[in-house]
Amino acid sequence: MLKVYYWNVCPHCHKAMEFLKSRNIPFEALDIEKQPEDVVKKIVEVNGGDDWVVPTMEYNGKWRPGQVFDAGKLEADLKAWGVI
Image 1 (cartoon, rainbow, N blue to C red):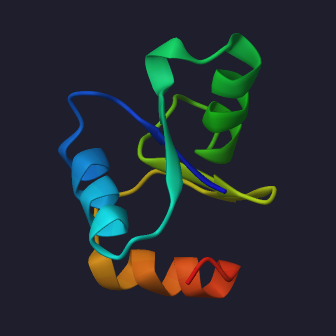
Image 2: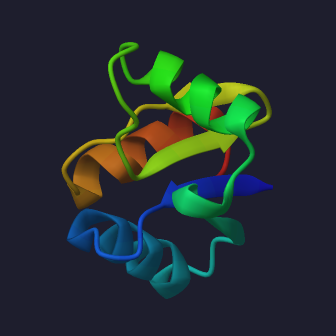
């Protein structure tokens, strides 16, 4: 299942999750502030090693770094992963 690591006050996170809901794409929403240290370290690594950036997504071991919400880019990335 697609995992979405989000921060409660992140507008791009909420837009990405609304996008997924509107397309009936199942996902698990995971609050970055409630994740164990090893998960946060992986998210930092995926995002260049300086800090965590959200929304970061993971699907079957493939990671999508956090980025500004862009529906077309997100859809293309999800298609490339075989999510949709």
